[in-house]
Image (cartoon, rainbow, N blue to C red; front, top):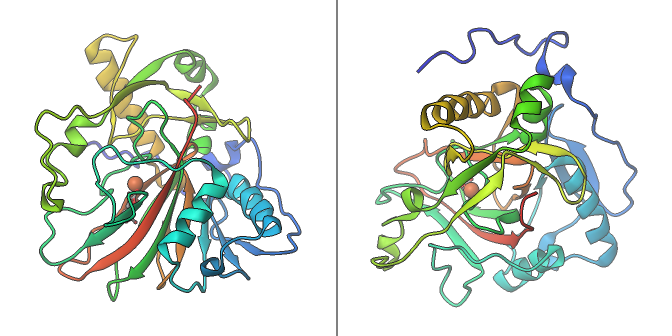
Length: 303
Ligand SMILES: O=C(O)CCC(=O)C(=O)O
Ligand SMILES: [Fe+2]
């Protein structure tokens, strides 16, 4: 693979793609939660509430605002959240999303158990993606609490898709605006849940066509919406054009400049906005175990 970073300007303040960001994150005085940037570009740590107790209306308002401002939140110093409570917290943000392949946790179809261990053949999300972007209505956000961590490793990476869009040149943005890409589930999900007892013979996994740039329905900002995991082609282009342009866009969107890498502490809950971030989970801790619960919230049709 070509070295995509060969011409990278690095992380100096001048010449850095960060300087092309159109908007800095607002600093707000929240009354019910403590919010601290995780990194200068993306993400925030949230303290001062224990999600195991649920969310009050006042806390919800502030968490929602912090989520829109920071794109991914990391709730620190948490207790284990009961499945019913995590489901109720998710429902504050919208109807829940049910995964097209994963059968969900016993008794809780809205909860996906994230679990990799010595006998696992794969781990969830080992490639850059936005969750289930192959759905017509892909998830707005995902809430993951981890209850078992390896001694080290198992970080999750996040990348800012607003910044990826904003860093493209004006002529390229003009060309991409109005193009659509196909997102497929088949190659990701086929056979994937066999060890959960799922026989998917005859099952049709979703595929959807979405605009290459989507406008976030709540912030009004545009984000690049293609990802290496699910996106398989650009509708309006010839196959070779589509392949070359998509490869460029994947490499662009995955640049270090747009990324953070999150090191989990026990019972942290991450809540990411799939409309404006991609993520990738690192499975570098085998044979150790890593386990948690995920609740996913249904989103709008990307436009
Ligand atoms: O395990 C993780 O850190 C994230 C896995 C993933 O991609 C997901 O749950 O959506
Ligand atoms: Fe994911």
